[in-house]
Amino acid sequence: MQLNRYTDYGLRLLTYLAVLPQGKRASIDEISQIYGLSRNHVNKIVHQLGKDGVIATKRGKGGGFCLAKPANEINLADMVILLEKSMKIIDCQTPACRISPVCRLSGVLSEAGNAFIDSLKQYTLADLVQDNHGDLVQILEL
Image (tube, rainbow, N blue to C red; front, side):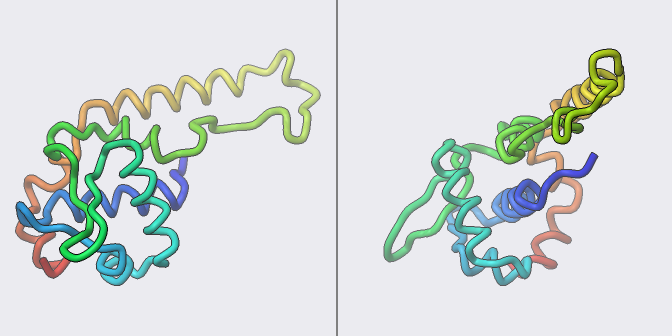
């Protein structure tokens, strides 16, 4: 299973915010530059995460965005589900598959996808950064 780029970029953005010094806000340009992502992609992700209450956004002078709650309260499974358009691993209807009425592949892959999400439920954003916080700060030039 491979997560889409939108989810990948969203998790990178959240990782950046998790190591951002307390009281500091990031900008779309900052995230775009540090990760080499298009400003448009970052803008869409920031908009969604802000709308869903994961990040707090502020416009204007001194504006930017930061995590809306502590990193240890942001569950990775929740973020993947939020950012992925669909968790469906296989689409047996496009094009229609002749064996789908008796095929077990869809069920097996769905079970595997659920196991993946269950595994992610054990981790928070804080878990991604706690043991390598200093290295991340240096690499991300914070």
